[in-house]
Length: 96
Image (cartoon, rainbow, N blue to C red; front, top):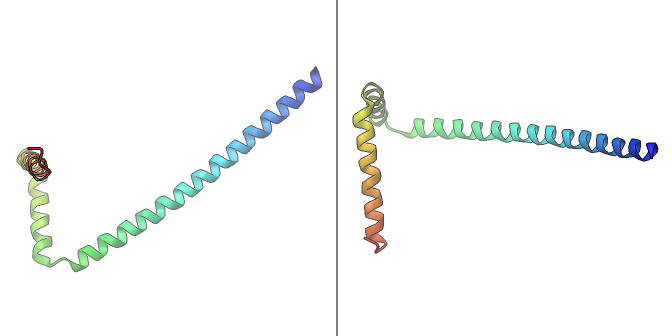
């Protein structure tokens, strides 16, 4: 009985070690994937910024600054835009 208990404990310990190793490997893969996605997003942002005309960038910066100073009107406009998109989609799909 004692030998059997020790054998089961050994198997459980081995399974735990194996699970810990696999979890660490999965964590490493996730970190690598996250780094890749962040790199791709950064590259895409740079390409967009480089290809966007300066007046558009200036206007976007102005809107962002105004939105930070006065978030209420910006939220109202955003909510209105979402509502309008929802209504238009329903009408176009024949449900409105």
